[in-house]
Length: 115
Image (cartoon, rainbow, N blue to C red; front, side, top):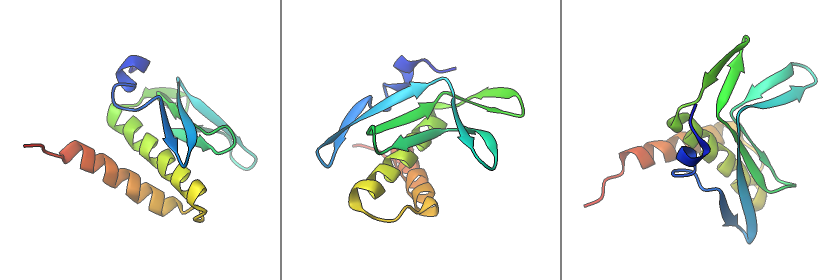
């Protein structure tokens, strides 16, 4: 499993959006209790009340814990960041748009070249 130090080299621990300080919290796992589905593992979550993005270092499915790669964590970070943008802009949440934008950002970051 990646260390917090390795993660915070590529994902910020704090930043500001629309004059609001946002904190990024790395957790070993994020479990969300859903009324219909029960306990559900999440890669990350945006909390507009606390102005935090929580990111999981691993996901447990069917009783087996799998550590996430740095690319998966970056994708999760961008995913939650775009939810943050939606919240502060007043745009309705659109999960498909957020998935697309987060994957595009990771591909951009991984493919950019500097002369």
